[in-house]
Amino acid sequence: MFGAILVLFVFAIILIIKGAIIVKQAEVVIVERLGKYHKTLDAGFHWICPIIDTQRGVYWKTVQRTFDGQTYSGTVIRHRIDMREAVYDFPRQSVITKDNATISINALLYFQIVDPKSAVYEVQNLPDAIEKLTQTTLRNLVGQLDLDETLVSRDKINVELRSILDEATNKWGVKVNRVELQDIIPPVDIQTSMEKQMKAERDRRAAILEAEGLKKSAILKAEGEKEAAINKAQGLKEAEILKAQGEAQARLVEADAEKEAIRRIAEAFNNQGQPDKYLIAMKYLETLEGISKGQDNKVIYMPYEATGILSSIDGIKQMLNK
Image (tube, rainbow, N blue to C red; front, side, top):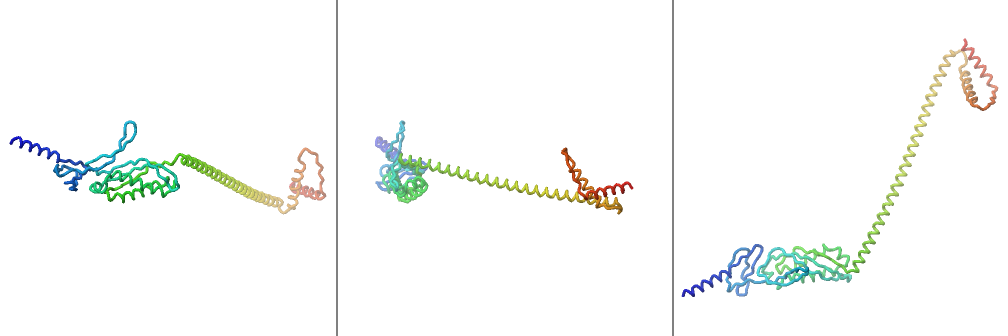
């Protein structure tokens, strides 16, 4: 009797231990009762009946890297579903563009399970299904673009691919948050052609920039010479104007001086003589003095009218003596 009670007690302890489940944060457990969905266990402590209740396992694709750097992928069965955002690195694959160029593309996919029940019962192997869907969708999108468009339309492909995947995986209880194309590698011969094309384009831009620089330099030089010539002409013009104004002022001063001299001479004569003859005689003598200067021998011909001038000078002398 005691042995039977002990056996029942041990059996009850085993049932309690087997039925106790502790679910971690950001994880859920799908529980089936007699092969049918029963409930979803959230984070915390739970107890299920080990005989009629079982945890539903899900297939999950894993990638492992060995010490030699090689990567191996496999499928395992998980009894706990991670609700956090997951990142999946798709292997590199060959895709043909619209212009029949074969390129190699690998991508990163960020997704999150929002409905664990649908992720378990609506699809057999969720990661593998997402991978195959991404590959086929990517082939369709790239097949509609030329090689040049594919290389420059990475953001466009990311947006369209995410939209299509998010709509397709909604039935599986999955939310696709982001898709990123890591590398787009064209064939070697196309890479060589592209490098030559880029080099030619850079050389062309360099030649254009050099020509534009020479053009601007020539224009600036011509404008500088033009401005210098204008400034020079303006300076010469202003100098000539100032010179003419100076000569005019000098003549006015000289005329005023002669006017004052004539007035004083007239006052000196005091209306007793002819001051005009005096001035003519003085001018004539100044002219003769200028002619007689120099070392060369000169013959001076005295005009007939000079006798009158000399008589005027003699008359001035007599007047001054008085």
